[in-house]
Image (tube, rainbow, N blue to C red; front, side):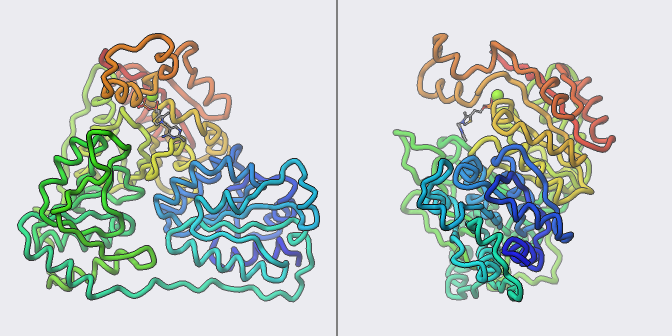
Length: 520
Ligand SMILES: Cc1ncc(C[n+]2csc(CCOP(=O)(O)OP(=O)(O)O)c2C)c(N)n1
Ligand SMILES: [Mg+2]
């Protein structure tokens, strides 16, 4: 057994089943070990940002880590934007990065760089292995760190991967959350009891089924409103679950929502701030006078904390949650006519099947979708979490690998799609049930809106050339077909309904360009 086999056997023992890989010479022994270890499936992605976004999508779906295999510092560098999203989403994720042989490092060969320094910006845990025989221990530690909802990065020199590790003991990760602080829970219960208008801002595991049941009970007892961040990483949604309001993107609307509350309890997320620094607004979206308390830290289990809070409020886990708090089925009419953003959202909401996974990187096209979706059949809903674009395609890929029996629908803005479009090739190769709906408004529309906010009512051709995606138009059908994904372009609702229904009924990936009709 060499070091690479030692490492991958440890990963399999730790329950890791999938690796998203873009390897090079420094990872050759690990590539070979994938071939001899049946417990893990390695999937080739044609850009590291696809590997990292896919591992994030996978981790969000299953709440357990996938690994990425990346090549030296430049490979990690290419994956950083989506690792940023994973960090923000608190996704369990394990990077394995090959490093030059230890004896070669001082030669300063072309691909040499400070990998640890780069890794430290997005990792909650990172380490360069110190010897071949500690590789298993290192990997087990990395997996443990990831289970707290972190990116863990293990850097493995190439000579350690080749080294003989016969007799090395495979280490299993040990993991448990820290205990909940009942004092803090008592204070939170007191805040919710003694104030008239209260908000419970939830994130992380609170947005999974068990957490949502707890918050529904807390709402039933205290009357608090349920709120989440503008970009929730992963939530379960639909009939029978409580509706949760998202904090709006622009500060005016966000403040209008949050200023209603005398007291706020935070679970699984931080105090809300504006997305960007706008000179007319404070960074914080809360006023000093608003009371607030956070009931779980990064090493505690958010769902468990909610259980304690529900208990402190005497909400019996046996009692029935009042129906008024849970979403009822909504009846949506499929519209006709132009592909306005509103009509597109209605079509998706009306047609999405039970148990769909919805990835929303639709940016300015999908604003009206979320409010329509509370009363839809049960589904999972994912957004970038970290605002770093180029996430939707890789995330959809990883989600489809995690849940091959479910339909994945990626609601994908056009500009963002171009960052990681190579994900289509892997989706074709793995024959994944991913429908990519390109919101083709042929611009970086959000930047146009921001320019408008900044008072630039009309922009000249130079500025326009930085926010328009025309001249040439992007040919989505050719791009998709060129990577093995069947595709079609549609420009009215009836055709969208036809093509979307077809995509959902047939196996394998499909891409639909929706030519958005934008109001001028
Ligand atoms: C990695 C990264 N690069 C750049 C940006 C800045 N940015 C935010 S939105 C956006 C353009 C979005 O355009 P598109 O995806 O077409 O969505 P639309 O605004 O048209 O709805 C850009 C460039 C970012 N958030 N992340
Ligand atoms: Mg666009």
